[in-house]
Image 1 (cartoon, rainbow, N blue to C red):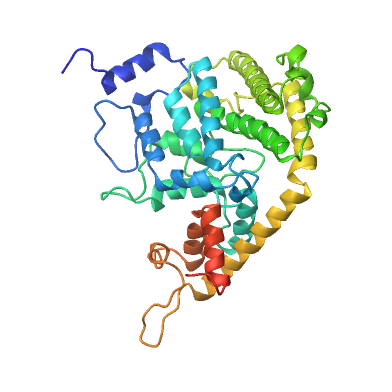
Image 2: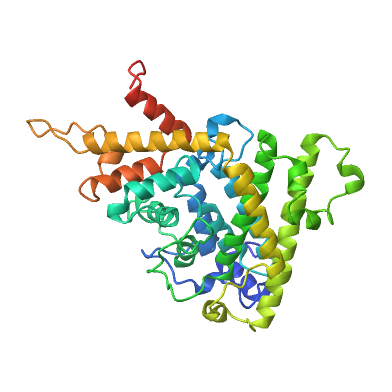
Length: 398
């Protein structure tokens, strides 16, 4: 073997030498549920990242909603573009703090893989329809997709990801998420890499919702000037030229300033937190009892103000509410017809299920409602709209 080849062992040695003492290093992984031989050239978290990127569920994120339904326009963010932005922001923060970028990236790429079509509206509907069977929560669904539903390997179900990547997925927390992580040391804090993804997610969706809101005409730059974060953004905006820029450049520089302001404040306060709590190992991270990757109180207040502004002026705008209404009706109508005709047989015992074979094959392993839930959660916006037309428009081909 050539001296110049960088083997997995060399990668692990490099991590030991260059990563911070509180970074999660590959050689200390708790491993995978199903034992596999190590790869000669890739670390455990590199393999996790690659498996996630090649999954069917990851590709479907291209046509899943953030705020605007995919068909509203090609410019608006989808789950895939959002995921790419989260991964980019998270890797920037992780590199600056001396953390494991590959673990960070793997968690970031997987964090939204369990999302339904139609964004949080779709999740809310499925949660209500599944309340008798434990509800629906997209972090749990992400783990279910990657641990059970993806079929890529003959020796085991799912992708057989490492314990740390799965822990980062299930412990993903935000305003919308309240995950059940009972199998992943719920009494311990997640790795710093997972904590970075939590905040990177928030930074990404705050910033791109401002961008998409301005593009849609629902938000305005003048309105944004009334938020508390504007004063911080002005420190990095070139105000001498900003007002004279064309709108596309204004939006880009605005988004850039918004992201930069949040990342800078986050890194500075996180470094203070690590020193304050005397963090010098992964064990101390886990036992800290608080999230160490976080903003100071001033930035938290600025964020609350920005979220309140977006909630009032964007998320509750009548155009967004109309999209939510359509999403609610489509999800409910499809779920109900699948439930009525999902597990029926004729007099000869032959199945006459309305569900396609890729969904109905799990009947017996899971309840009918769970099978329907898995199937609908996997749909893209475009697919669910086509499915709705096939089942409820008599002139549409099935």
